[in-house]
Structures are given as structure tokens and as C-alpha cells.
Image (cartoon, rainbow, N blue to C red; front, side):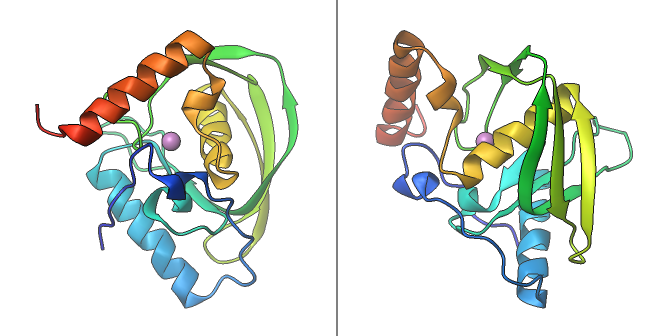
Length: 169
Ligand code: NI
């Protein structure tokens, strides 16, 4: 089922996600809804908090259009190592129409459970590393706007506020 994606400044995006106690069929159903919602958007990542479910689940698929899907599910993720720096022009399904350069670690190692509850460790670079850091932020109630300087932050805030008042200009 396609869920509604919350848009900034919805306060629910600031909720801290709680760990998943067990990967139940209910959690797997949530994962499937998230995948359907992300692909419909379309986007390269989605965190559960973005659809108003404050649990530690996010998904990422950086495959380009026409490529085979590379859906990766992260449950109770933990970034255990980060190194280097890179700047990436990021977007977010909760900030439609916004794209901003954001500084991230160039390489991260993340530990998580997959859709079947099996633990895995993944080391990622480039777009995948960026997407993991971006989605992991969501689970802590942190958003891309928090990475911007004061001037850009104000501009993005205003743009989103305006969109809220007049979603179909
Ligand atoms: Ni996002």
C-alpha cells in the first residue's frame, strides 16, 4: 500500500524512531509499503519516520532507471565507521523541489538487520553512502535542512512554508 509521505515542516519528521524489537510480519508489511511508496514517488531512499511510523527502518535503492532494482532494507541500523568527506547535491521526498549541497562522510560502514531479521554489515561509498547517512538522520529526527548554513536554511524553510500554504501554485 502506498503511504502518504510527510513533508517538512510536519512535526512528526522530528520524532526519534524507536528500535524494532522483533522483525515481525507487521514490520515486513511496513517495509513492503515503504518500498511501494518510495518507488511510486520515485526516490532513492525512504525512512519509516517519513510516513509517520517512528521505528528504526529505512530502505535504499540507488539503481538508475532501467537498471535492476537493488533494494536494501536496514532495520535497527547503526553506522559503525565513517571516513573521508564528500559533498553531494541531495534531495528528500519530505522536501519536494529542494536540492542542496550537503557535506557527508565519503565512506560508511553500517550494521543492521535485513527484511528477514538477519544481521549484516555493509560498507558503502558515493551515492549509497550518502543515502545511508541521509536516511539514518531521519531515524534520529534530523533532516537535510539541519546540515545547511543559516541563510540557506531560512530560504528552504520559507520555500517549504510557502508550498504548505499553496501546494499547487
Ligand atoms: Ni529524506
